[in-house]
Length: 82
View 1 (cartoon, one colour):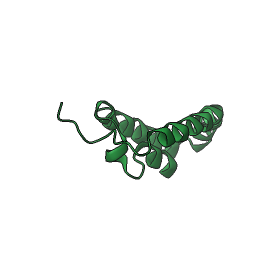
View 2 (cartoon, helix red, strand yellow):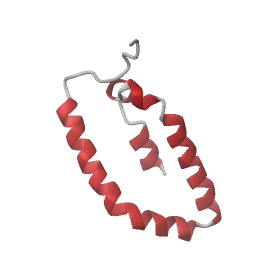
View 3 (tube, rainbow, N blue to C red):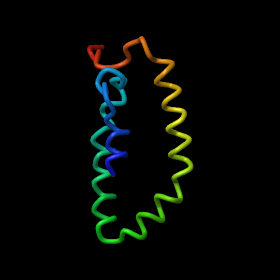
């Protein structure tokens, strides 16, 4: 679960996250909280679900890393003034 939290709120989160994405964070954290609660009652089912989506998550990680590299040097977060 710590990996999921780190993916949602990585280092330099406020600097790298566009303002229009910040409003979604509470929903994502709520979903992670629900997952933790469900995993507590049925860890085997949580592992099964995790394995089912693992390859997608890995591919997403590769794409996210590439996108972060392409953004490096520019600021895309925190200026939410409008």
